[in-house]
Length: 509
Image: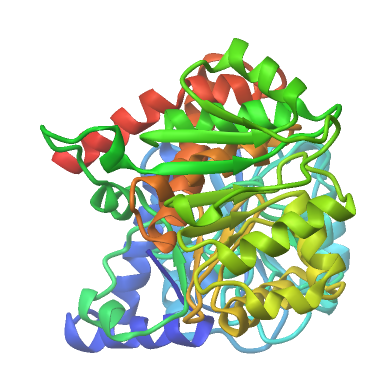
């Protein structure tokens, strides 16, 4: 699914109006109907609904939605906020329609004094339709007062239409003091870039994409660097095993992981790798780590390092189809030298995570001789150590794009919506996963999944897309069976087979 900037969405709207053809007021009705259908199963018909409407088209959506809600037996009240002396044409039309049909369901708010008279403690469900994607400056005056009022309602569940008011869709909103804190955003046709940024977590707790039938030709013609990963994309990338395939045809991977006190990182990554389809896996680590590995994963082969505490050597890295380096290896000088050797001599796919990234951050000149299409999987702090500290998630995203292009690598920037930056500047945001993954070992599990896919001869780009999505999908399946508080990465790995099956079934439908 494409992710567009605000001006592109306006162009798609205009194209739809011209070429469907459809009147803009009818497109607004379509959007309001989509919101009604989304809310129908979420809100209580017996409780009052409070719809705060601005004077633009987003407010027009809210006025139309109020009318539809009342037509269908809900008790909805619209509050039209007169923050300007001008209203959009379609807003005016829906204002008249609501006033004509349900005059007692519309209250005009013209100043802060009238707003302050509303009993905020009684507002249990609020619909925010103050401002849409056309926001071009920070809210002020009565708009700012209304946003603060909504946020101050002590027990309200807030639904925002298209975007939370006060939030920019595609640039940082950090300087905007007044932003609606939405429990759920009902957004039209495409997710907005801002929804995927951690800095907006307080304002976009959840979002739902509503199809309002924008013209497919307009969507196809608009180009973008940003995409939201859907199941169709991942299912289409899956490779199927042939009847006469054998372990050799599914690749031999090398995992360099673990050190004294960090054997678990190697075991987690190894199990995830074998569960993700690798034909053969050799784990190079300390003897103690390999002894523990044998108890957990007898299917893996092993290569013991001569050093009892950490990895200090590697032999023939060129023999392997794919190599993963980093989980739990530490920062010893000899271990760093091993990574340098791998960078020089490996010929297959290469993945670096965890301490592998920390070693790179201590030796930034090594970035220049990384092989093309190496996969790096930093979390936010690891990426900042590799580059610079960033003032916003949007700045970090642009930095990630530039980094991937400069070093011809695939950068997997881990977060709630992990961003996969490709060498050509394209970024894919993940749509799976949950906070249950916010625990030790989750990154090691992802490393193993990616290594297993690289062994299967997926391209690094394909492996990154499938692996990140699969990691999150298995976690989502796991969360349905147990609490996010209690789930462990070992539980997620055990759900990988079911996640694979789910994707395979999608591919055959």
